[in-house]
Image 1: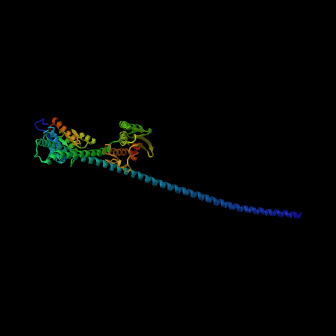
Image 2: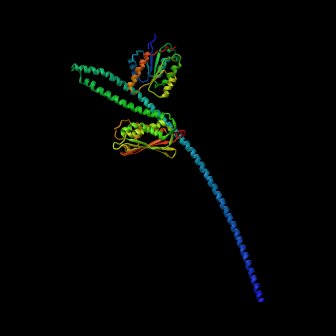
Image 3: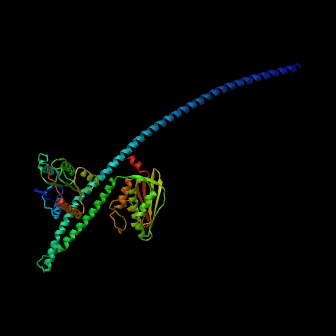
Length: 344
Length: 148
């Protein structure tokens, strides 16, 4: 029994010891846990602070960057405005220049034409005299005098006249262009389809003769621009399509309009005409320059005029073409001319 | 234009001598035989119209018709027009502006300043000769007032 008690006491003592040890263990673990928690909390706190600092510095950087962009933007806008104003000045200077040059060129031209006319008038009695003298059998007339009165002088006068009238045409063309630049535009809200149909109607007569057709695809777009100028632009393009159609197939012209990014509208005038050689693509827009066989009357003014008009409307015109297959003229126009005009 | 004892004289202010000669020839062809006093610059023309003292008293009781080109070497014709219409002695003298400019603002400005007729010189000569001849016919029937 004692042995059993001893054993029991020993067991209790051992258990006690174990409990004490486990409590000690637990306390150690608790202490560790506590420290771990503290360290963890510190780490989390540090993380939070770091994050906050990071966010703060990022935000500051963002703000600085935004301020910089704003400054850049303002200076960019100022720069754009400055450049636009410079361009405007240069443009009006060129137009003024063209205007003065053409006027100053006209004055001597009137003299050349005037005195040529005087020479012609004075030539008549001389010719009559020579003719009368010859009829009387005037063998005493020097041969040079007869040739001069009957051939050389009239020929010279003829060449002077044809050259001056050609020069007159060229001067008038420059004058027309410079005047176009000075024209006051009257922007209004327009249904694009109506404008294009009206332009197509102006060439209806030529179309019938050429057995061709123009299709204006309805776009239901409206645009704020100058109606007269637009009608002139498209009338001119369509007229060209008829003039420079291919002899091998009936003419077919498609006019398609669609919106473009940036508040623009692109109107494509696509024909199946004779096309333009690649090296002439830019040349066709130049004043007095033409391309291809010269079998149509014209002075090389039309497309130069069209480009001037389109640019005045705040747009541009480009051409794509394959020789022998057809050309596509693309007119890019601002949807709202007032916005462009207001910006400049 | 000889509608009074004193014949009307035509003061032609035109810097281009070729034009001046063509204008004179064509006015004569319309049967106008009045004296034409030509000037090729504004300074001389002003000296003639307003005298050395610049008062315009020399033009008193004259009958003059002024044919004026706007593009002059030393001043614009508009300056002359302004002075002529501003001066009590010359303001009634008819001024015919005959110039190459057909700018609508310029035309308005000339009429505002009191120009009596504005003619754009046609660039082709036949038109030019025709215009001058018609102007000559017009001169032949128009009354030119005596200045004060």
